[in-house]
Image 1 (cartoon, rainbow, N blue to C red):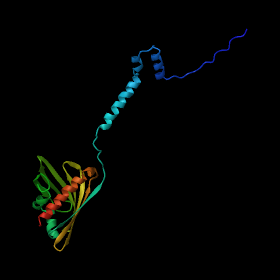
Image 2 (image 1 turned 90 degrees about the vertical axis):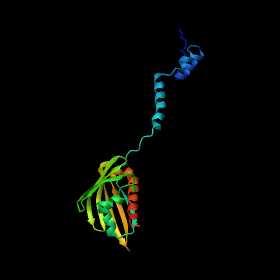
Image 3 (image 1 turned 30 degrees about the vertical axis):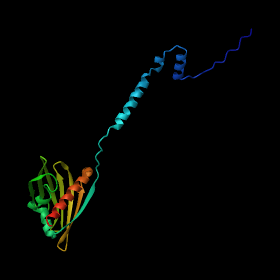
Image 4 (image 1 turned 30 degrees about the horizontal axis):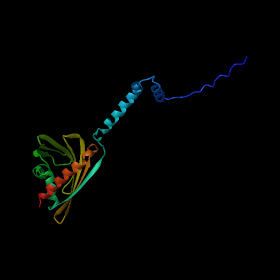
Length: 208
């Protein structure tokens, strides 16, 4: 007895989307069922919708920790001894280093011990907030060079270093200032430069 040859099996790979469309055309599945998204598809859609939202948020820049130096020069119409005195005598310090000529503040107290290793404490009131500037005199070469540390009560753990040189020529003094800013104050370098520039201008104005 002869048996009929078996029919060849045809394997077709049909995507779920194509299958759904064919079932819909055959009337076996409603259009609503075909359009319904799977849980995985809904999750992907939710994530994609949320990503732009997070991307549009403007996060504050991360603080940069980097040592930097600020350089300033100013010509003062006075001998270097006179200019040097204005950096050390409290009554003179209050006339240019602090006060309304620099920013909106007034002097509360000025105290210092003028010697190598001596300290100072300058207190001001700025818009209702008391701020104290403190430091130590590292080097005193009267009247040529002054080096001291510098910090304030707003950032007590940050300590900068200020070097002032007083170069006299023809009864005038070329003031050269170098401020080695604490690494954690890098983001405030422009503000520091602006403040010390205003101080130097206020000092020079005392001898016009």
